[in-house]
Amino acid sequence: MTKLFGFSIENADKKSKSVVSPVPQNNEDGADYYLQSSFYGQYIDIEGVYRTESDLIKRYREMSLHPECDGAIEDVVNEAIVSDLYDSPIEIELSNVNASDKIKNAIRKEFKYLKEIMDFDKKCHEIFRNWYVDGRVYYHKVIDLKKPQEGIKELRYIDPLKMKFVRQEKKKQNPLRITGSTNESLTNEDYPEIEEYFVYTPSTQNNVPIAGTRKQKTIKIAKDAITYCTSGLVDRNKGTVLSYLHKAIKSLNQLRMIEDSLVIYRLSRAPERRIFYIDVGNLPKVKAEQYLRDVMMRYRNKMVYNANTGEVRDDRKFMSMMEDFWLPRREGGRGTEITTLPGGQNLGELSDIEYFQKKLYRSLGVPESRIAAEGGFNLGRSSEILRDELKFAKFVGRMRKRFANLFNDMLKTQLILKNIIAPEDWDILSDHIQYDFLYDNQFAELKESELMNERLGTLATIEPYIGKYYSVDFVRRKILRQTDQEIIDIDKQIEKEIEAGIIPDPNSIDPITGEPLPDDGGMMGDVPMEPDLESQGGITSADGKAAEI
Image (cartoon, rainbow, N blue to C red; front, side):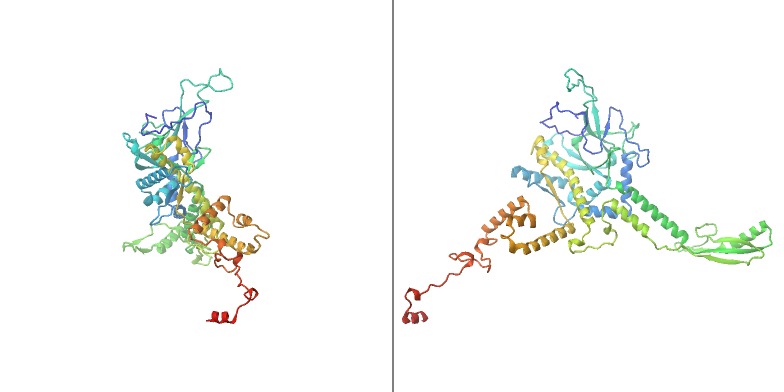
């Protein structure tokens, strides 16, 4: 890796060479395997779908310019990335990380720094859209090679058309065989050693290297110097990373053809056409044809006015799709006659267009109700929420988790370069690092609110029977659907709030009146009775008068 441009992070705790496998590691990142070749090959599709990965990316970008497809993409991006005036679209969550507060604060500081040099808060919409359309995104981590401990200085965006991730097999000099027999030799193909790097092509003519083109200037870049994130969708037959738009290629092409055919049909069939039956009498065939042409030119020679230029010109030399029909008629007929053909019928039918629009949205995972002002936002009960919206919310959540891998790689490089953590500790920490995105899907909130209302209503109905037929633990688990950890956390929070005086102690409140119990009062709010003075000897009239005074 020292011969490559960039830098490489070496793990001090390397895996033992005794742990080997003949199967290369597959991260489903679409990297091709190039076996000892002097040039970098590309898959050529004979089916005509796409020749190279570059052609595939260009097709995705062309699709994103279509109005219907662009509308669906914007729905996805706006749902995944919520821009707010005050809050950042994404924040790091370290509550599950088993580390000291000092390390957590350092991680938060470095994450904030990475967002600043990316300018993520301002460009978050464009970054996510590029990743969604292209199916991949690349950033070059620029560092000072003389002072790597200062961390990442700059993050530069790289056009995916110019970048290719490569896995190449390295030959071993003296391989050792590890089998059941101790004297057997191992060939190089059994346990291959894979070298991973990126190939950058600065040329813009042929953005991605193609087999047989050695004249192109390419630069090998170390894997650790590049941050990349793919969509996670891989064509397993061809090993190519796909975009989320790949499923919509056929639907979009069908929609385009239907729209074009509709325009042609309406232009050709909408106007009324006329049929001219010209009486040619007993004229010979040649003269009859000449006479028909003279009559046709006499009536076709029309002067038209050009509203754009203000010119008047003759359009007789132009043929149009709305030509009339001129037919000769021999003697004995009904003479010269003009008949009108009606225009096309049912030109207002758009059911086929609407069908393919819905099909396009379904292929992109966007609910059909979001098509141009068809579905309004109803703040009603959860039963009114379409199931498609819930599926769409889960789809966006999966994309968010995949996109967060971009920050994971940047954060790993930054923390290791600045000696905040060791390379061998990153795998342990990364499993517990989470990223919180701003949430703007009110449908899920309506669903949770409705479920909570239903549970509280059931609780109010079953409350008189608690302690008689149902236990408190049963109600909390089965009715309120509280987990074991939630029960423990809620009990701790209640104790803290009682000690802080935020809520009253339920043991010191009369359940009947709802008022606090006296300090020396009996149980359940019993009111102490006045003593029977007469049984103790009675009271005198003087005592009574004194009491009145």
